[in-house]
Length: 257
Image 1 (cartoon, rainbow, N blue to C red):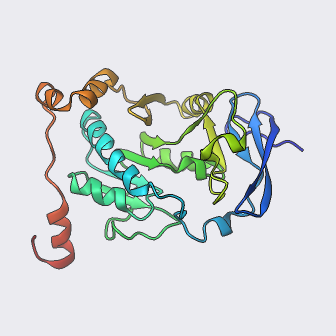
Image 2: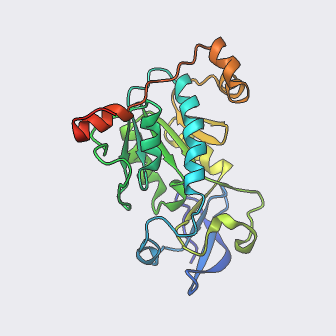
């Protein structure tokens, strides 16, 4: 029996099967309305998350370095960002690096141990911005989780690779990640637009980062700054923030660096 789409509720169609974790043959379904791709109910996740970060995710450090630079630029244009949360923050690498850039980020992840952002776990009920990078494809119930996120913030930054049209077969797209089986929800451009409408948000896609927000964002200025940062820094008065590294070290040790 076909499943209902977890994004828009329309019927889905079985379009492919694959072997995950080297031993389980599972079914993949595509939504006939919004193009969202989902697996059958993921009974294998306890095994998939025996290690929260898959050993094949060798791009984690590089990806965080790139995302820190892009997010640092975005936040300078988003206005008065006093606090932020990284939802699904993994080992805390991104939070630590953003704090090093002067942004008051906190960490949350129910599946992973916080190694690098200890003492900066989620402490608020509301944040100016929430980031959730490479998380949405892991969600069993995307709408429920997004509802939780939008109770915490009005502005969500996220990344995920989008399903193309036509939908690629499992063996034709690396992002299905059948080696670890953690990617169970794959989004099309239309499914992201459905999500934006559902939560009454505007959808922007800037320099590889999706933004869902009620705020008007100066897209052209951000793209210009991305290509010509030092010139934009003078034109738009983009100031670097003082790092929180020394403050955080003092809170832990009572000493300054």
